[in-house]
Image 1 (tube, helix red, strand yellow):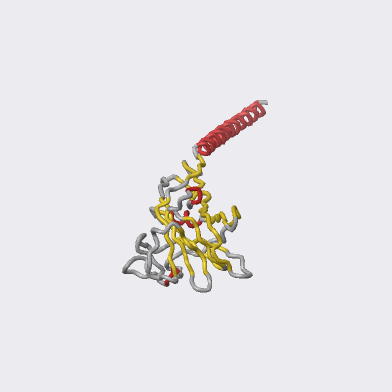
Image 2: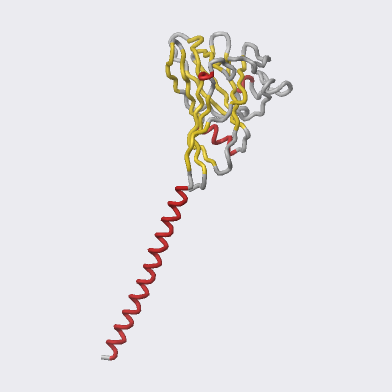
Length: 232
């Protein structure tokens, strides 16, 4: 009878130990959920539009001329030439900001279309450090050439992103939207102080509104979807 009582006490003690352990696990799990929820709450998503710093275009027909002061930028090709455009925006993001999505929107008119082709436009990032008021088709500044004229080398630019979406908003006038998320994210990773874009096209030639265009609603817009706060 004494043996049975001791056995009963031992079993009771073991059950109490397990109950204590499970209670601790439940408390820890609850604290973890509260902490996780707090971290989620500390993240906010906002839409930002960085300031445009400059735009210009580079022309195969005028390979040594800088066009920074033009009110228009030109993108694409025809039988005689190719033009590419360069746009620069400020990067004022904080260290704890993450870009979820980035789009670049410009307004263009179809200046010349090749018969039988639907013109397409593309964006790439710029690797080479260029001088705003000196960059041309041949050179990044007065003394240094692109690796290939027109920034056609991957030493000067990144790979082209997917083709832009184009929406007709008027007679022969299009709103052109580039997905530039990868470009912006790479510029952030590389600690660039600005966001630089090279725009190119094929199958036609577009004249687009630049920063100096009198119709402000047509000016280029870089829009960022930004998550700020503690990373998950």
